[in-house]
Length: 142
Length: 142
DNA sequence: TTACGTGCAAATAATTTGCAGTCCC
DNA sequence: GGGACTGCAAATTATTTGCACGTAA
Image (cartoon, rainbow over all chains, first blue to last red; front, side, top):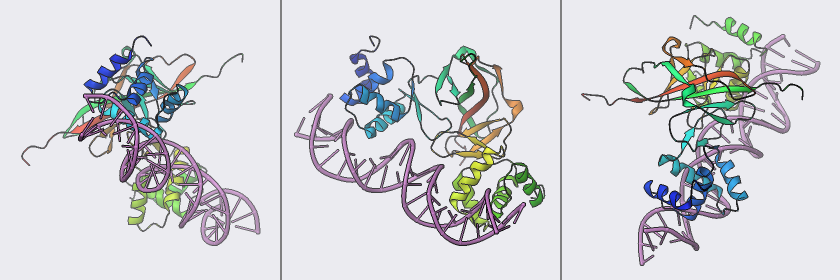
């Protein structure tokens, strides 16, 4: 956790034009203090409760949306109704483990498009999202 | 519509182990009678109403899920909470027009991965979903 | 001080489910 | 005729919003 002291977090929020309130700092610490993560609102809320951070689910939702708007997080669309947020906001792609619904980053070097498609007329490409669905192989030997 | 007469639809449903009921045939006709389409449950429900097909929204949802389970449709995850269904169930990818939320097929020849990433340990690749987000260019000359 | 942020619970939106009646085989 | 299918409305799940109070600047 030494890599993300509170004052760095506060600066980060400041630069994003977000007041570094107790709740935002606490949620930011949970989000950014442990490397790249993929979380739903519910998951973050549970972590906050486990960490004895007093915060409401509504504030978790609001905070995630504010962080996303500020470019601190990236929202990822996957099958299912829940929204995932990625603490790595830079462009990259994901594995989706079908059984568990877990997301795993794909190292950028492992993936590239051979050919960029021509966009429909009157449109420009804004970004590319790739999800590689993977399935657990049956374990041998139990 | 000549390309999808009702008896072909009935056979299709039969092969999928689904009874060709009035509602399923009618919804299948709307879905498959007009080429490749990308629809939400709500959109299909509206089309059914416009076509004077007596069907409830719940049945539209159930039918879409049954068709998807049978491999007749493919569910597509995009940003936002609504589920899209693609009448082209074969593997292919999509443009997502950000302003309208519309989906457009990408010709398969226009897109290829230069390198398939190694799956996480204990996993096998089940499929790849690519969404190319595009933005409307400002129109000139009004 | 003062506007922004937060908590709570009710409101929404999308989707699913239970049950009684209908229809295909 | 029997079991699968449908319709309706209520239930669920995920998320947003309104309002009164708290708090950072």
